[in-house]
Each structure stands twice: as structure tokens, then as C-alpha cells.
Image (cartoon, rainbow, N blue to C red):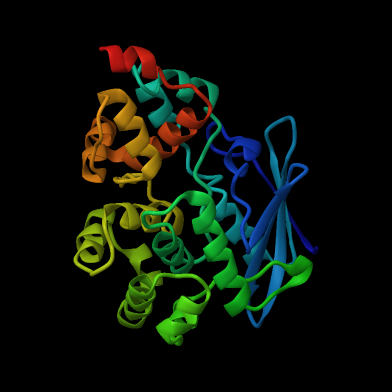
Length: 286
């Protein structure tokens, strides 16, 4: 490693909380160290991050480009204090926001990977979706040090026959839609557009619903203002609150109170649900 960057995160940030479930085919989080494979120039390099007890995050990489990219992936400069202040006394998110205040959504290193993740995760449980995503990336993308792979690019996925993706576990219709989108949209240029315009553009595409667009916005583009409408965890939460079966679209009502923070609110709702930090019994009774 030839570049070292010491970053004081803006606002509360916990690498341990944020990266707890972030490991995939391109990165690991072990023993407090986050390691990410990045395609830089013609090669693949590793960038690592560790947080000290003082809160400073030290990034080590082989290049300045790699260090800065990892800084963005970890959202170190994206202060979410306004969100935390707004929901501190929220009946649903208050406790979770206080106990998980250092949590931020970790991003993936290409918009193409976020789209692949969205298609893999449609209507199936998260663990199976992650296995399918990892299988595809390991089969199609070059491996670097420590057997970590570079994230897929738009051209990687656009060059495939859908049957190749199908052979690695992706449903045929989703495989065809993924390849078609990668051939018709310059996904990385979505960074240049406001979230509202991105959502309008993507929801017109066959095979993409609000949840999939939410994954692209949150993990691929680093936007916090579009929620994970239809997420199975949020469906479970709403079913508990209402005491009946619910449709995915109804979860938009859970996120509506959080406005421009509906994306990060999705993350806190799901994390709070998993850790028992949401007042489900009292809310259901009310």
C-alpha cells in the first residue's frame, strides 16, 4: 500500500455498524478491517479502511484514486446528522436512530453492480439473492488479490447473452432485462442527474419496480432520498403493524413521513427491525 488517508467522518459514523453485512464478492469486513477490490487503470487494487477508537478512519490503498473511491463508498463525507435530529423522537425510528446513530448505507463500486443486485434480489430472500450475485460476479469478473473481484461494469453485463446469467442462477426474464438495460442506458452517467429524474427514467423500464430503483439509488448512486418501497423486510414490518397481509406498494406509507430521507430511513427501519429496536407491539396495538 502506498497511499494513506486519515479521514474524520462528517457526523456520526461507525464502520462496524455500517459494514457489518457488507461483505460480497468484491469486499470483506473482518476483524475491523474493510477491504475493497477496485478496478483502477488496467489492474485491480485493494483499498482497506480501519476506524480507530477516536473515530478517525484510516484508508490505505495502492493509489490516490483507490483511496478516494473507498472514501466515497463508505460515505465518509455524507453527514446524516439532520436525519438523526429529525427522527430522534419519532415514534417508530427514535430508539433505532439513537442506538444505531453511526449507521450509514455502504455503496457498491459500480452502478452496474447495484442493478445486478436489484435483479438478483427481486422477490427472494436476501441470503439467496446475495449468493446469486456473488456467483455471477465470481464467474464473470476478474479476480484480484485475496480472491476479491472487481465490480461488474456496464460493458461487462451488456456483452453477455442472457443465457449466461441464467446459467448462474438469475431468472431468465430478469437476465434478459438486465442485459437490455445495460445495452440501452449509460448507467454511470446517472450520477449526473437528480434522483427524481432517475426514478422517472428507470421505472419506465420493464422488470424494474420501486424496490429495484431504490437499490440503484441507495447503493449505486449514494442517494438517500428514494426509499426501498416493497422491500420484503418492510413488508414484514407493515404486516406486523397492521395485523394482516399487505402488498409491497403499501410500504410507501411507512416511508412517506421521512421525505427526502426515505432511503436512509429504509436502512434504519430494516436494521431496527433486525435488532428489535422498533416498538412493534405498541404500534400494532395503536
